[in-house]
Length: 171
Length: 315
Image (cartoon, rainbow over all chains, first blue to last red; front, side):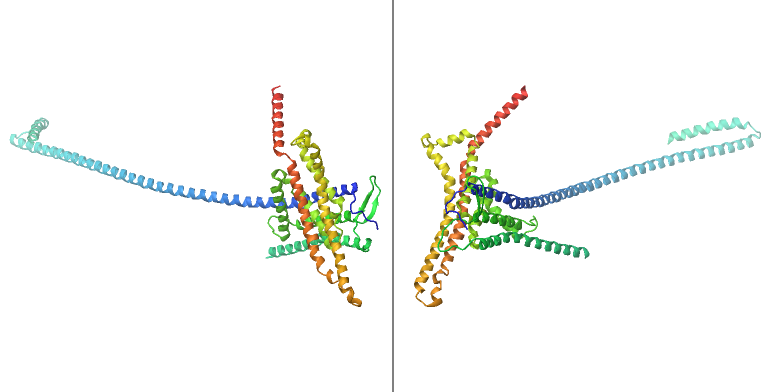
């Protein structure tokens, strides 16, 4: 079998060797670097996703904490407001009750006063009538004859009224 | 329970399938090497005596410029390429973000190392060179290491290494030309125009020196190993030759000593030359590219374009 010289140059062999290196370069690029790079990118994306998820969860937790605190504060304020309003209401109610009581008492006093006056008037009228009757009867008996009852009553009425007036004036 | 069982069965099944594919891929790695050994055993006669020759020629394809001889070094290069292809397929098979397998770690390690090497030697702009440098390291290193299984190392054939060096020369020239042919021609007149012939010589000498350095190292290793093996044989027969019968044929000094030399010349020197070749490629290519000038030129072009745009817009 023939063999090459130790130092020999052949253009075709050189060209083929050049192409061999290029082919191996393409093989490495496509079958080694591409899948590994893809995998590394995927892993990076996975890690990034995890990080962003954690960040999101943290944000969410902080937000809910803040919300909770806000709610607590708000509810405290609400409770204070409710107590305040209840106090006010109670005060108003008690004031109104007092006023109404006073009114009722006033009314009752007035009623009593007017009642008393009425009674007094009634009594006065009754007494007047009695006196008229008695005096008429006495005068009839004394005079022995019937006088005009009507005229008589008017006379006595005026008389008694005058007396009442005088007694009132004395008071 | 049933769901879990089904899942387990499925994972078992997929694992089984993985194994079959793995075996096929590993066969793809090993079979070309076995075929190379077989071809060598069947077609190439053992050398008679001490003989230093180039690669054996299987047949010659008639072409102009001297024809294309298909030689041992060509065949072995293809064997290395096929093995490397299947190796890539094997270590990247089933690679996923969530699953960490040993071979995925190997693949990651390879890529990380080559990328770091390229970035630290060539800079950010040449990050895309990583697969090329990786291919160069693998092809050169594996070619040199193919002596370990008895194959003729393609790197000890000048044509093979010259092809790579010429590719590097093309890359160097391409990056020098990126700033325009005028800048390229001007670069020869640096630092004084008087030195232009020397610059041209040094430009042409780059690929030649690269090719001869690599080829010479591997070939000289082989030659020294051969010479030493022969010398040791002579020494053995000199010392033990006086003994009668079979005792005189004991290869006393041929045991062990050539193995030590082989560790240096085949493994260490092969890997080192691959590394040196890749390193020189990186340095020459990145050194050939005047990145500042290129950026300035690009910016100027951009400004010109924008000006043209505004003028057009005004019209």
